[in-house]
Image (spheres, rainbow, N blue to C red):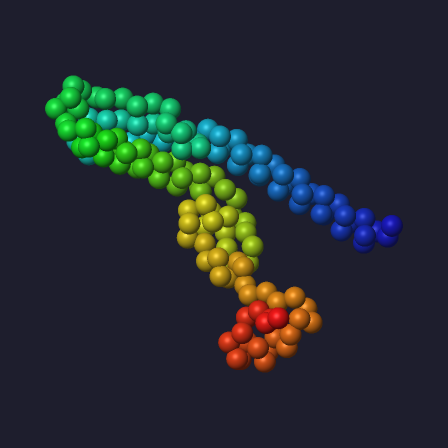
Length: 143
């Protein structure tokens, strides 16, 4: 192995170790994520874990007893959604700023990824004349 090859290999190993360290730290931070939300009327408080699972549901007063069942259900569900949304934002912040092309991992997690740019049209090599078919509006060979 030449000195240039050895230096390139050592550089690659160092980059790998850095990515690995960052990935493990991100995983640890993500596992620790929790989020708490309180309903607009302050009657319900919900805490969720990193997977969006409800870890705590507290009725802050007896006021919920005067609510219609549908109103209480709506209040609880809205509060759960708020807590989950907060947890998702925190999870996105834990992710390393890497991705494929212009699409970042955090964009995939929060739903803002442009899937068309991530997954462009594909035609198997030699299956048809790509330029001609695209001009004609065909994106896949016809059998």
